[in-house]
Image 1 (cartoon, helix red, strand yellow):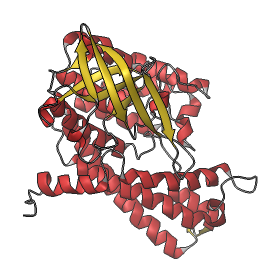
Image 2: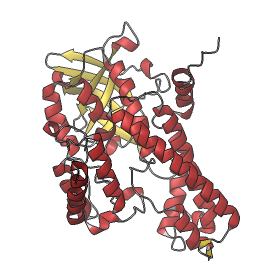
Image 3: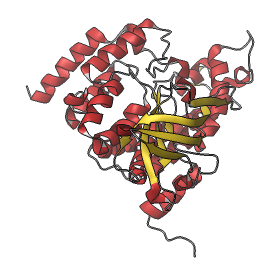
Image 4: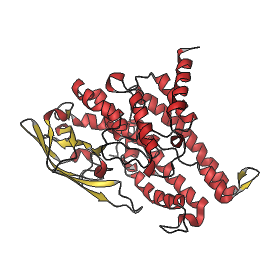
Length: 396
């Protein structure tokens, strides 16, 4: 028996013993996603148990080094772990901006002390992070940001405003781009880590047409953070910002904009609502549409796996913009198709006539329109693909 086969056997046995029954079922809504942090409310005690077990094993970040709380697995072992989690239909133990975005750049740019301080907490889901990038006057032109940070003794004092800050009202800390030099644009930006639980930080949710408020305005008024919460060099944040955006686009896409949860397959919903003929979906037209979608979904999944393998090897590239763009379009397409399948059940906003799944689908479809904005707008991502992947020239 090879070492990898032995690892598979050990992993399978551990998962069978430690993955709780309810963590092997599809999520029915985004509310079931576990984000961790000091404010997390576990509606299902088994979700907390699953996080503690996976985090303790380091398997929420299987490729990260063990000395920083990770699993220390090789690429091959991590692939086996993913296969075994998929075999039992396990839910992700943790959805985390710390895992997807902040952690990878900390591994590359942080000091040893910073890695020891922040990474194990990310792995265990003890801190929930949000991202402070966009501003009212600096969205597409991110380098035009004006949030100012001034060093005062052993602390940075920060003043400014961020917008579209996902889950800022639920986060413990924020990784934030700030201006530390006003004489230059790109080279005057630094990357700071800031505690949200202080009098100088306030958040205001932005309600979407779906009725939910995943995005917020974030106001920083003489907010403070220790001097040693600067990641990388002063005025060197733009390089980190670009690298983090590539990780964000890859991981937000692979998570399907829903925290990486395993959702009910569209074909199962179609059979329930449209009936079956000889084991196939009853409506031939919708059946063809669903098959075409599933084929694109399969091809996309393989592309994501290749991109993730490159990222784990330190080869994150601008091609992540392709994945982010396609993922946004596919998620919108999937939810619009569910509208066709479920008919009247998706026309409600509230009331006993409508099922929880139908109401969730309605709000999910409306929420999905923001997929074209978050993680970089579709227009910006297409520009990145044109210039940095295809090598096309700017219009003169």
